[in-house]
Structures are given as C-alpha cells and as structure tokens.
Image (cartoon, rainbow, N blue to C red):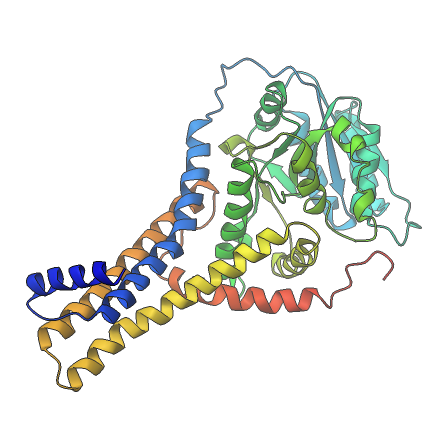
Length: 411
C-alpha cells in the first residue's frame, strides 16, 4: 500500500510540479469515494424506475389480461364527495371481468347515500360496511379483510375512494402481471400536488419521491419491504395462506408495510409503474396526512426489515461525512496557503474539491428530476441540495415522534 502511494505521489509531482503528500492523496481519494457512494443510490433508483417505466408500455391494442379482478375500495366518512367521482372511473375500466366492492369504513350515512345514488347507474356495484361499534381493531385492516372475503375473483386490487385513476386502462396494468404469474403487484400513488401549497410543500414533494423511489426500486429488484396501500394488488390465495393481517393485528397500521414485507418472502412480487397504473390522491389536508403517515411508517418499519433502517442510517452517515470532507477539501488548501504553501497547489486542491462537489450535485439533481418526472411529481431544481441536506434531520425527528405515537389498536 505504502509503495503504491509513493509511486502515485511521484507521478503527481511530475504532473503538477509540486509535492502532494501521502496523507493528502488518501484524504482526497476518500473524499472522491464518499462522493461516489453518495450519488450511487440515486443513480441506481433512477435506472431502475425510469427503466421500468419506459420498458413496459401499455399498448391499447395488446391482448386483454384474462385474470378476473376484484377491486376493493376503502371509503372513509370524509370521502363522501370523492366516492361519487372515483367510483364511476373504476366502473368504466377497459377490462374483461372485474367487480368493484366499496367498504364504508365508518358506516357513514353520507357515504352510504352516495353509494345508493351510484347504484342506480351502476347496478353491479357491491358495497359493505364496518359497524361503527367496532373498536380495538384497525379499521383499515378489517375493511380490507372484509373486501377480500367478499371478492369473487382470484386477485384483489386495493385502493381508496380518494385515489383516482388517470386512465381507463388502470386495471389492465395490474392484470397482465397476474397473467404472467405474479402473486403481488405494487403500484404507485401520488398526491394532487396542485392542492398542496402550504409551507413545506417542496420538501413534502421531495421526500415523497425519495421514499417512493426507494421502495419501488426495492420491489423492482425483488426485495420488496413495503407498498402503497392505495394502489396494490395480490392474490386472495396468498392473503389467506398468510392468514391475512394476523401477525400485526395489535397495530393500527402496517397493512402495506408489514404484510407486504412478509408476502415478499414467500411469493413473487412485481412493481407496476406504467403511466396508466399511477393513481392521484385527492386529500383535503395533505400536510396533516403526510406527517401522520410518516410517523406510522417509521413505527411499522421497526417491525419489518432491520436491513432497511441500517442502510438508511449508513447512507446518511456517508452523506454527512462527504459534506464534512468537502468542507475540509476547501479549508485545507486555504490553511496551507496562509502557512506559506504554493499558490498553484492551493488552487489545484480547492478546484478539485469544487469540481467533485459540482459533479456529484449535478448527478443527484439530474437523477432526482428523472425519477420525479417518471413518478409525476414536481421537478424541483435549486432547492434540491438544501432539501437533501435537511431530510435526514427531519426524518430523525419524525422517527422520534413515532415511538411516542398511539400506534397500537388497544390505545
């Protein structure tokens, strides 16, 4: 090792006409390595997600999938207006054999009235409800269980009344995976970004893309650890073989975290990212929902794969160490110059640091913007480095809050 450094040192001296010490070689080499490790996850996610979107076009002329589907729609009391918009979109899908089952989670009279009106124009619409007296149980898990048990067909697609498909080929994008032998299909849902204009909306958009790109890339590489509960599908046989949500009945949440991570260990999981498969959530107070869901995610993450948490902590440590080295890479040559060092060496080392930072930042920004375009999210630009910097700190705060949140069914 020492011999190699001596050779490198001599070669650099011949090229730059000034001496570079072995410590400087090691330090700047480590800085370059940290920069590469910082941008690598973003490059990997970009290649995975963009490649998935562009390599799986949904052609209208393609043969119809043959697997019959049951669509289970979760409708809460505050979804009564969205029900009348979303259900007709679901009932008009271009798909062979399918059914739509709406579960009135809160036994809301407003939702029930909306469903009654819809049944006049869509007589095949099926509905059920959860009694308002139900307590000490996750209503979402119970709603999904009721929907799956009521399903007539071998595969179910789970969604919510406030999640709207942008295409009448939404079901086709899922059905083709079941025809190919998949047991679980993980889709993607994004909020209606035009309605989120309150303070912090850029950060929420950035964090949403960062989170989604992570779990979608994992699913693409057959290492799924979570999904999106408003756009996910699985075979009913897999649901019953896993005994539903029995392993997480003590938790209010986790139907798309713990359950999916368990399914991924035994069954074939695919990710679906065609433009037709993406749903848009229409939520009145997205800021509040965002905070709640982040806390719930962190709570359930501790019950899934410890590897995910470890990799996240490791990546954050590498990122902040890279920033520290970047500061040192500029501060050191300045110190060197003021202590009698050569101007040429000072400019060379500082410039090399600036170039590495500029290249790494450009790769990160370009990768994020490609991912955000594929996921129909705002394509941020100048705020991205700052948002990347503060994200680990905000997530650490939300993770701390999640440990104190009421995430147990008996609370």
